[in-house]
Image (cartoon, rainbow, N blue to C red; front, side, top):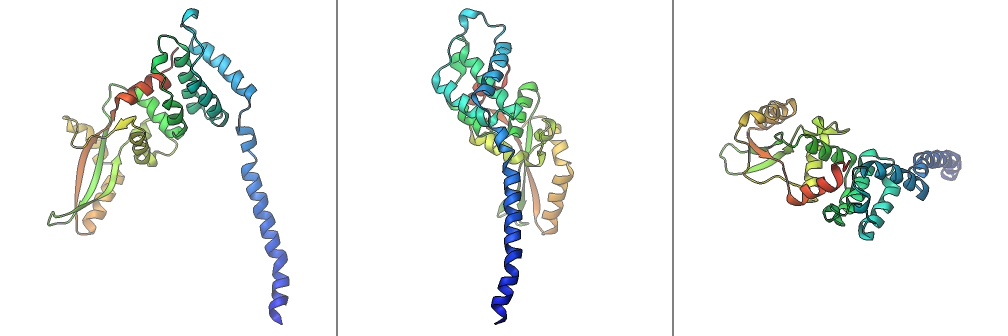
Length: 248
């Protein structure tokens, strides 16, 4: 007999919790209404932005962009308009597609690639363009047993690129690099490293790397560091030219 009484007493509390949760979810989703751009906002942004980016292009070179690029780009801007680094990439791509002499650099796949980028990854790409002549060292740390029979990766593709680029979440730089490689914009070739080994010292002496090495040694294993480099692919160079470098 006590069970129904307890159930009735608990019901208002359960309902109240459900109501509070619903309000919290509603409050969390409400800002999305203002984040989705309408046609008017997109036009207002593009008219002024593209005019600035194409100001050095003669009028006779300006053309209507290919629908396979412009259509998806305009649709994507509805959801990326509030993110400066990404909307800038879409604008650069459209400006490239509108310049008769540069339009061939604008690949239709670039819209989907931008769509799959995190804002931090866009910052990394901008930083690579801004520092094109600098080295981009990377290291991976492996744990080997003392017999040297087997090893496993403990820290993959560690880099300070995220810190240098001003990423909001620099601790995710390894993930960002793997995604950029997945998108064929970059590659980390196996067995390739810089001749000047001093460029790896800031990475190998980083507190995070030293902590990983210490943990490996604590587990009675031997740490092994593999020095690597980040290369921009040919396809990636085309993407940087079309979407990252400001045409103006």
